[in-house]
Image (cartoon, rainbow, N blue to C red; front, side, top):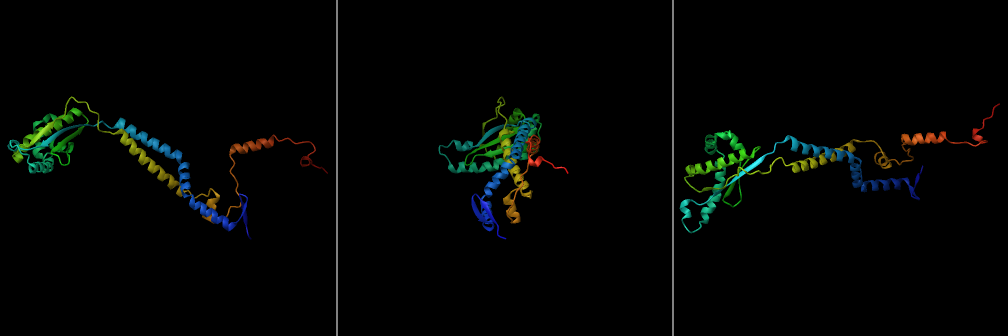
Length: 278
């Protein structure tokens, strides 16, 4: 039996209709993705909002603010070399190379044991000091920075100043040189802003991660949903044309339909309302 389908005023053979529907379904993949996102939009927005709010609340209420204190140390020429008027480029390059060695020495027990011994009020052992101290250097310069982070800024400033002073003193005995100077110490009276937690960064991370996870979950739910919802689904999964559709009626529409029937009036003499008795 040959079946033709009337579509927008044109008569299509069933085979051509199926091919047209299949071509259109392949071209509208992007629209299908957008439809999935639109369908799950409420879930995505709710999840992103909850995760971002939770990150903000955790950062502000449950994380202690961390402060940072720092000092700068310069590796310069020795006292004997400063008396000469010429600038020794080789010596400067040697000092720059020595910074990598100094960065390792400053975190060894040779320095930190002295700090713990000379500054018992800090209440830190050599191992604890080693975990607190960060030593950074700027490329191709003779300056290195000592950084200490703590929940109490004054305590961090005391620690970083103590380590800098002890290092300046002890390096003279280790290398027999006097080429280390402290450029600046941490100011105890300063009231800096905390460096951690970074509320904006935490919210941004929570926003991006939750958005990616929720979008992925939305596509996963759509992939696991194997119910047939449209004529295109019938054609894709069954390979058969749709002959008829029964639309779903909401309870409100059903009630209104029954109410309209109950209120329908009839005229006298209507044949469908006449019964004949024998």
